[in-house]
Image 1 (spheres, helix red, strand yellow):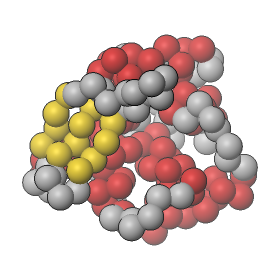
Image 2 (cartoon, one colour):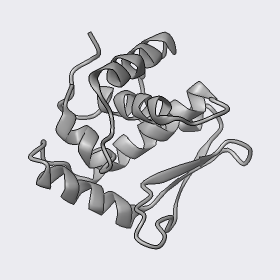
Image 3 (cartoon, rainbow, N blue to C red):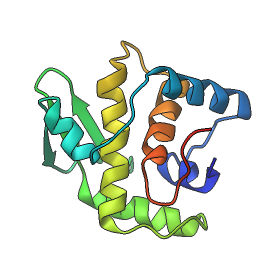
Length: 141
């Protein structure tokens, strides 16, 4: 698994190998194979995508899903930070389209999972799910 992109997506990076294996298993067990772009899949499920400023007081927020209103918000300024962090981590260079797709795929996982509580493994699973469909990342074995 590409730890540099995980670190870019979650700068706190507090995950160990056991948590990563739990996250990978959650993604596998959700049984979804993305055959469309994340945006197309969200729209197929009745969600719309909007761009909005989400980050506050030094906390960078890439995206957010509102399950009730069926809206996925993406913060383009934060996505540019994601691109910078990925480059700093020595990961593959991301362009804007790939980075937005990472954020949309991450939020799509939350739509699919419909988890009632969010813990570290849930967030890591959403990152793993997003990376599975991003440019240059291998499918889960």
